[in-house]
Length: 307
Image 1 (cartoon, helix red, strand yellow):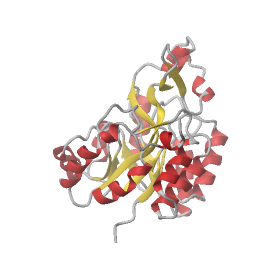
Image 2 (cartoon, rainbow, N blue to C red):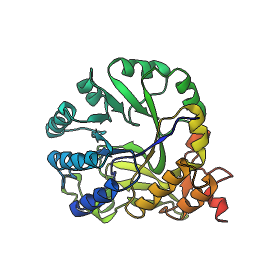
Image 3 (spheres, rainbow, N blue to C red):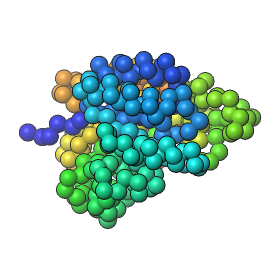
């Protein structure tokens, strides 16, 4: 019998009002996810919740039976951000997801998760990070099934593999805030315009093709990555955890569909068809197949819907 894949919920990538975040995690406590990642990973100005607030949420989720991991910023620029990073990495209660090498250095000798923004492209990198404490790694989003196969063949013992399987893909980070710039505002006086875009600000080309989403300093895909149809392949490759990235609406439904498919209660094609109805723009899975990330394969949910 194959090992059961666990289901994780990544950190919220967007800037939501405080009450929305608190309400969201009340629902997550009752949802069928196994692992929950908490914290701000994009912009330190998004501070409606402080570190103590995240720790309180973590305690409630742990009380509900969830494994909790605290996530760190992917791009740090100020001493205040380093101070917060040090406190998160020094906590004694929870694993930490390191999203930059500064966090990895602070976490040496302790179990930690290497996030997708840590550039793990070969077995040597996997082995080096395992030696300093890494116990789980998230496949970089641009890598393919073939690359994962090679990495799994040389994966150190005692290290779990997690794959980002659903959500808008975080493609890049910048010192500039693109959402503020879109509103002709400087980054230091952004007026928190990210609050207006709970799933990011979708960009289109001059001919109307939607291809990117702005999320503050983060650039995302406009399409939603959906690798639900690859669950059986991931089982064969020995993937331990699959990650859903939160969206502002119907997140509970997305989690339910994945859980039913993992448990064998719903077919993967039927699940993909349902998921396609919940996406802001539409699906993509190109990176997994070694192609342009915004592409969708021929057996996609888009074709299942007849679009």
